[in-house]
Length: 616
Ligand SMILES: Nc1ncnc2c1ncn2[C@@H]1O[C@H](COP(=O)(O)OP(=O)(O)OP(=O)(O)O)[C@@H](O)[C@H]1O
Ligand SMILES: [Mg+2]
Image (tube, rainbow, N blue to C red; front, side):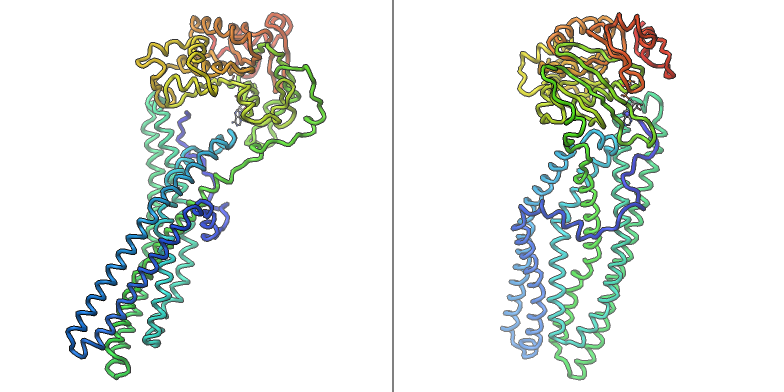
């Protein structure tokens, strides 16, 4: 894993971000919310009723002030008190019910969103993952989804509840004393304008805060995964500096967010208070003049005070909705990613023109051209017209200078990348026409960098084939000379740690090789599978591999002559084309470039070519 001090890739720079509406973003959550809609609506209804019950309290007060209190009837006062108590209990009960209704379904909404995000990430092509920083994906799968669950549980309901409460409350206010009610309505217009201004500014900041958190996650992740390099090169200071700089940026953004929130909140709190104050003064005058009963004024003011929370909460409810809209956008940015190459290519000209040659088995590359999607414009494709036929049962070694495109070519066979032109056939069938599952069952791969998962050694190997049994596992371990596994504390059930880092490089490579051969695949694609082995182990692996290769059609990227000797024929990749094909000896005789490559003194501009990993 590379350790960078440069800021990680930002997916979408602020300026390029299109304007979008909060509501439209949030509406996209509907498919996930649908399954729990009944409970969610019930919860909202319970909360609306509870909140409106709260508004009845002032009316009871009014009745008490104007009736039993004015008439000095203790019985009436007791009755009123009991009524108030009952209302309070009912309100509390309903709010409790709301909480109970939403907790479980919303956890399941979050889980299902996370599951579909994960599923989608697994299906997205390698090119997508090449482009996206893993921290960005991590933060979307964790922080953003948590935000969304919280939004569905709380702000969403309360926007509705408080909205309804405010409407009902104002209706009551106007019904009781419409002049005073109008006084309270005065701040509504400036507040609405302020809120919409706030929304625009807040949404931009919320978005950068969330993106920056993603970047921060990336830095932490790289620092942890690359801890060996960081320590080995004494880079902890510069890593820490990079982290601090980014953390500082996140802090600054969060502070700006908080500042904005504080401003809007101050306004939302102050304006209504002023209005209530004004109404109080006016109301007192009216009571003194005898235009208004004392009870009505009490009820009016208690209603107004009861509306304070719903109104004041609007500020942060809107802010939370804004955060959630941003989180939704970030979630769907990943979900919407279906780059052209995940879609199975329609049978293209070349595919339809070239007839399926019967009896032409094996692995065949026909005029294969490939360029990386993110390669700078104007650069030539990595592969330019590769023609190569590996006959059934044959082992073909692929050699070429470093950077000549060997790894790229091998990645095309399991369709980790899609060819840009030409086609690849397995036993005469175009790989784009094969269902992925069939393709993956036909072809097994082992890459230069052996990737292991946090699982047991045995599980890592058995991942190579569905339904492979213990016998297949033992055989694969033997072939790959990975029998060291049996000596581990718990044998094949030993956990190999995150990325298999508790194993040596050669051990990891052999496990990856075992994974490739465990399913006895028809086609085997090995990218320099023996590079990390010492000469003796290599010789033993080769001896065992020979048996496997005898029964499969294989393409083996090789750097060392000893690996090349495993193959029946050798193909030399040069400048994106197959420059020569033949047996090792033929090529040694006929191709100067091949001689140079094998002798470890390649004539290419790239001086690492071929000899980089040669033994003594
Ligand atoms: N994901 C990628 N995006 C863009 N360019 C890439 C990507 N991966 C590789 N390349 C480029 O493609 C070219 C071929 O790379 P490739 O890994 O296939 O070489 P290779 O022959 O396997 O080299 P080596 O012998 O060092 O393993 C290189 O120039 C490399 O910079
Ligand atoms: Mg390579």
